[in-house]
Length: 258
Image 1 (spheres, rainbow, N blue to C red):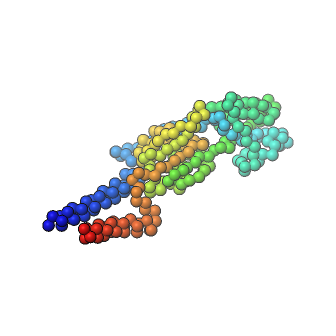
Image 2: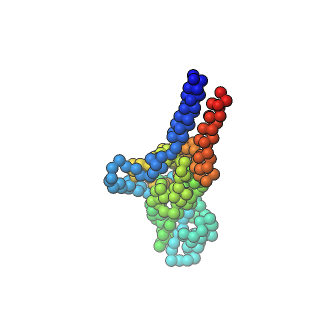
Image 3: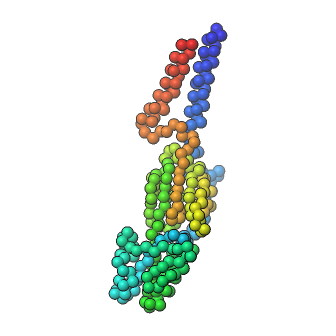
């Protein structure tokens, strides 16, 4: 009688342990849903702040004038503005905040927006070409995604690119990605990289300076600590369904042998 009770106790403990393991490893809707809020209300994103040029940024400039010969002379072998950037010359911003351009020499554009830098370069070129207008593109206008949210380098097709649009470009976060602890690596004005952790499940992301993605940002999506069971295919589903059955049968066999 006592041995039978011990066998039942051991069997019960094995089943309970498995249930606890399964329940703590499941990913609930609360871990998966975006923009959760405690009450119904409209949320507005914080105003967008234009990107300011930093050390080691690379720019592409294109000078426009009605004089085609002058335009070709200053733009050299570069393609037209908005053309194939791979064939255009790039100019790096140095530690002193300047960029070295042909003919006009060093010009300080550090911490300027793209529009401000365009106006600055236009003023310099107007000393040589009266009707000169300069347009600038950022050659390193990319962000990067790693982890359980796609992977690769992606071109920022517009300035006000938010984190949800960026993740959609990368293929969105997988079912086992940790939306609560998304890491964003961003270079600061001092040239150093900083890591921020954001929870994109909450509407508070609207008020974060990391809501909008910046050039050179790295978005890292860690794997959720609750994703012991990975259901990403039919094979994974079958494996998860058969696992408890196998454990129970093993437990029963063990008890009988005892």
